[in-house]
Structure formats: C-alpha cells, structure tokens
Length: 459
Image (cartoon, rainbow, N blue to C red; front, side, top):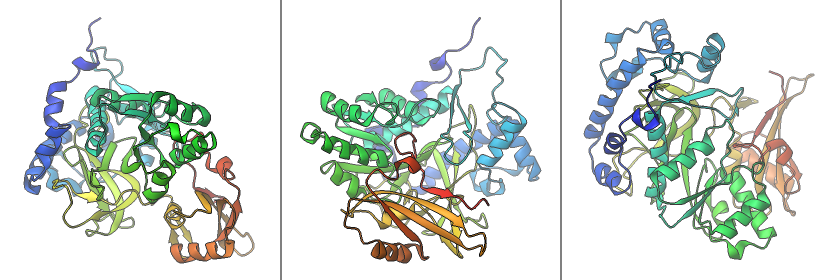
C-alpha cells in the first residue's frame, strides 16, 4: 500500500521560507510595516477559508449564522464569522464520536497524510481531542523553537522540560520544538509524578541543565527541592521559559539564583500564540502565523486598545487538519500600546490574566482567582502557592470565598485578608497552612496547571 510519510506530506523548505527562525526571523519582521504584515495575513486567511468550507463543523457553524462562501472576501471580513469555543468542539465530538467533525480527516482514506492525536489536560472539564496534520504540527513546533532562540537559547544549552506527557499535548510538542528547531540538548523530565522532584534536581546537577521550561509553579517548587538537597551550587540555571501569567517573575528568578525568566502564552488547539522577546517588554503575538482578536467578554465586540478582552485566535497556518478559525480561548488579556524595544512589527499583549469562564462573581464583584498570585508575590513569609474555595450558605444564599495560602511562618492573617480585599475589591477569608499544605488541592505535582479554584456552590 502506498501512502505519504510524515515529511512527504508537506514542504519543509517552504515552511522555513514562510515562517523563518533565528536571524532570518528578526531580519524579516524588524521594521516591517503593519500594511505589509496585513497583506501576508490576508493571503494566508483566504487559503485558510477555502479549507474551512471543506469541513462539516465550519459549514454548519457558518451556515447557522447565515454566512455563505462569497460573504467572506478576506481578513477584513473576519468579524462577520461567528466565534466558537471548547463547548462547540465537545458538542461536535458528542454528535460525531470519538473525534468530532472539525478535523477534516477521512480516516478510511489510505492516501491521507499522517495525523497526530493528543488531548487537552481537562483543566476546565473533560479532555478534548486535539488533531494535527504534519504541516500544522511542525509550524506549531517551529513557533516555540523560534521563540526560545529569540529569547536567547544557545546550542550549548541543556534544557529540562517539566511539561507533562501521556495524552497531553504539551510535553510532546515542546520536545519536538526543541529537537527540530534548536541545537540544544533536551531532557524530557515531565511532571513530578513522571519524574519525582528529587530525581529532577539530580538530573539538573548530573547533566548540566542550564534552561528550565514548563509551568512556573512547579519550577519554583523544584528550587525548594534543590535547596533542601544542597544541590544549588551544582546547578547553574540561567534561563527559564514558563507561563508567568499574573505572577511576577522575580520570585522564580530569585528561587533559581538570578536566572532570567521569560513568559509566553498558548493553548492546546493553537500552539504558541505569543511570547516575550529578548527585551521582555510584553508578549509579541506571532502575527505571521496567528491572528489575535480581543473581544469584550459580554458583548463579543472588539475592545479598545488597552482594554481587557477574551483572546480569540485564528491559526493562519493551520489549513491541513483541524483548522482554527475564530476560536475563543476564554483567556483574557489586554494589548500593550506604544513603541516596543525591538523594532518588531508584531503587536504585543500583557499575557494571560485569567479565564473569563473561570471568573466568579462574589457579591457583585468579578473575581479572577489567578489575580491572587500577583497580590502575594515576593513575600518571604509565603511560598506563593494558594487555592480558592467558593461556598454558598444555604440559609442566606450568601457566597463566600476562602483563600488557602502556604505560610513559612510569621504571617498576619488579618493583614493578609485586608491585602486581598483591597486587591480583589471584595472581602475574602484567609486560611494559612504549612508549606506543601495546598498540594493535595492544587495537585501541583501531577497536573500541568495547578487547580486554583474549587467551586463548591453546586451551581
């Protein structure tokens, strides 16, 4: 039987020409005008729409909104298309199990290109199927490898990844990004349940790890393990690339002796959407590959520059398997205005600021649990770990939130409660536990993303 292998299914040289890395990347997009960039995006979007009309999920989504093929002439018309989110994808899977009808794959066709299958972590519900074609997968990898190199990754570096594996996409595609698009050595340590924290820090010492990648919650915890094992003098971490979100980078940098930490943002369906450059002056959206809109959480209309909105993403490159056209991540951020420090044509965002579908209304105030991380950062008496529990009094129907925080001792709980009240705009209760005391609730050792909100209201 004849069928294409992975690297026969797309043109790798053309991919590198269209999506450059290294010096070619900075040379192309430094000083480029926004009009030139839009022309690149528009060409990609027109090709993407042709693919979209071939897929049942989009024909149904757009048809239900009264959209016909001729209605969308180019990228300028993108706001005519409806947005969709994970609930729509899960409904597609329920109606067309087990993969849904959004990928555009005929699995009975032996001549089809290979496909890559993973799932999401299930942080906000049941894990979702993720499917990639060779072209879409490699560009997804490329965007991460390009970002690491721009941030300062060197061929001499040894990277240790604490992203999870198994069915989850993250650890696999980060490994592919480094091995395919950088010359650095890569250690797939994984989460604490895959490689115990004690073994992780010994790997760093034994193999000369210089760069850590993953979620900073666990990276910070590993520093405590290394210190407890008296291994800090044998470990020389110079760079951390994780997901800082609302956290200040200073705490994780200090934990690893002054390593330089970089932030980036992406989701399983889209891959990397934005990342910091060498100047760390905001997260640059990879606009040659990703078209990002910020929409008002309530109205769905574009927000003004500087205002907070849901990140809605269109993967301009993903025109093979599972195209992504106006996907609402329900992650919120705002655009950074003004000149950037690199001369790059791409716009910048502030990074992940919370989830609009994880926002809770507490006595009339919108509360984003992730905001607590920024309020408690850089305090020597706290570890930085926390979890929120939301309950409802059945007799009064009053909602209350208790924030459980890890204290090393000496914390004034009343003063801390007042700090959170001022920062969140609403009164919450504070519960202090010893270091490690939140781990059973956050599941920091076993999850890609620790749990920060437990809603026990039954609503």
